[in-house]
Length: 388
Image 1 (cartoon, rainbow, N blue to C red):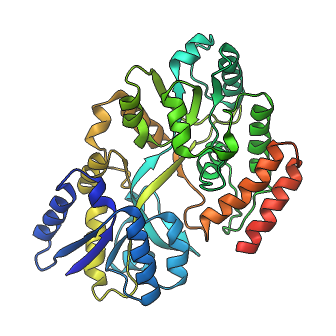
Image 2: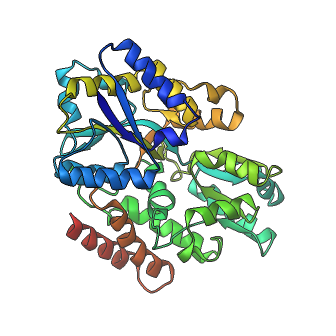
């Protein structure tokens, strides 16, 4: 009997995840799967307690932000070793989350964060095409802002309470142009030219008055509400909110696109994402059977089915979920995803949320004119080095 703890089953159509487990059991006689399902927050609490007590379930759903702590505690297994022992070809995996060269989490399905554009506001501003680079974006945001005093160019959530805006809305500009906030060996490097360029670019947008008011206390849900209500021209957001926006404002005309890159950049676009990740308990008495379940979920056909049910993009780079052919926006998003590179450097870092907050605090002072860019970046770099 394999125990599989995750928050996925409650978020999927009723019965769909159990049906996949039944299929796995049919293909693997003698292996049974017991699903330990609950909301995200309670699953996290359960796994944190299990990690501390050495009672981690055989297979676990993981958020990338948990991986560093669990691996340091020795609670989750080295998947690189498991793949090698089982002769697994990992070239089909879209991405892997590694610590010190060893994989501890495999993203099963991915929820991407493209640029959302209110095309009505874009048309009213006299802009003929969705921006593809930074200059075009700045020009469009300024023109949208000039059309109406109640409309802003871009929503930038920088709440210190939930500082994931640093990941999704700030560092995404770095990754979109192939940049990084880390050294080659995974240490902090937030004072580099990639990050400095993005920070100065955002400061320029801020000084031009195109950013939504209340940015310093804005959270992700506030950003989505502003966009849904037609108060902002652009936002970077999860594809998962497409249906939320459509339900909230059926008449809103909007488009999605890759996040604008540096002018002249021709490399692959980094696409910010969040994942349902999977890992195996280091204390499992059934590691081979646990790996069989991971391998089943990452197989081309199963992964496409799960991604389709979740309305997310597959972790197997050969899988294609059916929904991408049923909806033009999802189809376009899949093309963006397929042509770019998954990018979220906070995944796998220690105390990831703390790192976001420690960048957010001096970044707010920089935007407010209380600190210059070099001081801001050094302050963040020093704070990050202490955490490492």
